[in-house]
Image (cartoon, rainbow, N blue to C red; front, side, top):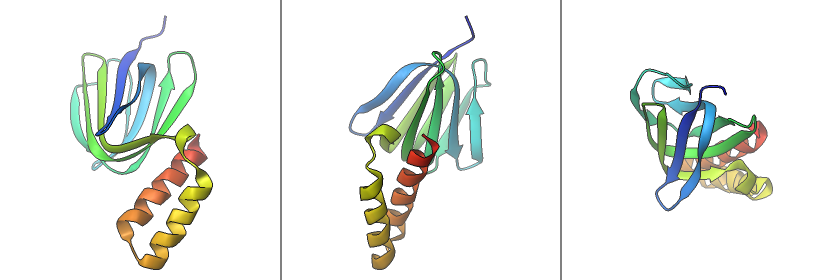
Amino acid sequence: MAAELHVELVAADRSVWSGEATLVIARTTSGDIGVMPGHQPLLGVLESGPVTIRTSEGATVVAAVHGGFISFADDKLSLLAEIAELADEIDAQRAERALERAKSDEDGAAERRAEVRLRAVAVR
């Protein structure tokens, strides 16, 4: 059996994904980071962006994450997000409409959220 880490992706309002993985890639304020079993302990601030999880079964789970924290120790990774959505839950057409609306309203925060959702769908 390959080495694994236990991953918990939690949003402020719900548990988004939990399971065993071999690799997690996330965006932090220091840049993109890849975490594998045996990684050095870390604590960081998440930036808005897609999070990619390679499960132990070989599947790929992608989520759009909007801010929060990442913590890793003893092969346990916690992603505590303000907002998180699995790419499978995102309606791409709705996200495109939200992006256009945010651009016309000059709402930078809404524009970034829509762009992250669309990137997560594209990665999936």
